[in-house]
Length: 146
Image 1 (cartoon, rainbow, N blue to C red):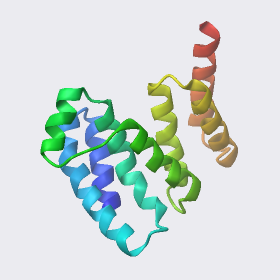
Image 2: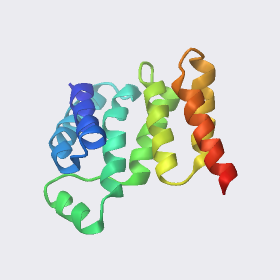
Image 3: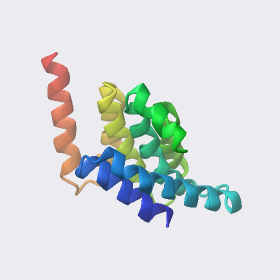
């Protein structure tokens, strides 16, 4: 349930560009995640569901974040990155997905070096995936253009 709600929230925010509509799913995912973590504290995969949502909320303007807090939704960039890092390091099923989301966050925060490190490790882990070399080349050309 956590993953389903988290993926719906990510889709609404990333694909449909409906950040506010994704908040319903974010709250739902957080609730399910807290229930799971209460009985399974080593279930790090669950943190990917809320990590990127927290990051997105932290990226919103201060007045929007304040209004969201009034509605019981909180988040922050660093808290989201911490959740994603936990899944990337200790997750069983979703570690690669967490690393992809971390790479996106690092690119958005202009930390291309860390994004390249993650994408390089993903390229090595999944050599038949053609997307990772393309993204690495794109980031490297952006760095050399500066």
